Image (cartoon, rainbow, N blue to C red):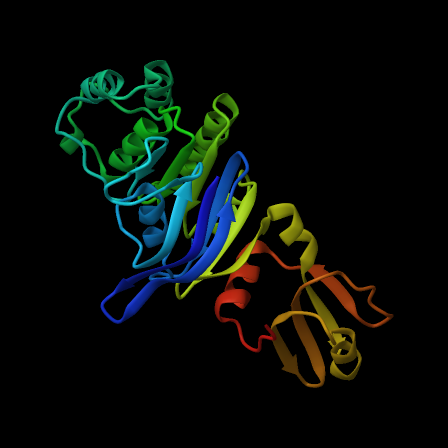
Length: 282
């Protein structure tokens, strides 16, 4: 559905997206991870047509995307998004009047679930509630592609749990591609279907989360036993202390011999190791 063909987006001397060729498809929640400045927001703005690519081509549903040809099937909610300073109930009414395919009943139901006072004006809301309202207004659209940039920013732990339920309910009611950029890695993993990790404008990993769960693991044991086991495998980090080696792998599983343990690598640890964690064999 979303195709990047050798796409570069340059700001001065910096390539925010660097020669990217990839495809994003399949209904469900796609988790977009990366350090600050990795290119996540730029990638989203290229999909939404807020930016023109410096080189290459972005297409959505086969149609080329640019600032002059923004795709109508894409809705983008940027972090810190502002709304007109109207009452919450009026903002829902306005969105219903202005947007084709808007589901006002869903928006009102979600506003009630998150205890959004619909009598309050936008500027009277807390930062977290402003973020939640913008997200609700975006998810209430039946667009084929929803882009959420740090949507859980400013939400407490309870609200983040409710937010994940909101994402799950939204994609079940209206199957489509929902791309969520976030730093709350293990939380989004509870509802996400696919994972994309970016660093320095490039994609380091793109896979189903079930695949990552199977292929990301740690082998721990005597270094002289573990090293031969990892030959030919993609190592994304290692730690050696006193002759014992913990090798972090993203590849096919091996059967460890006696004296070597194999443990699943948690998603957050996988992200840290892949992006900046010690020795790596690409």
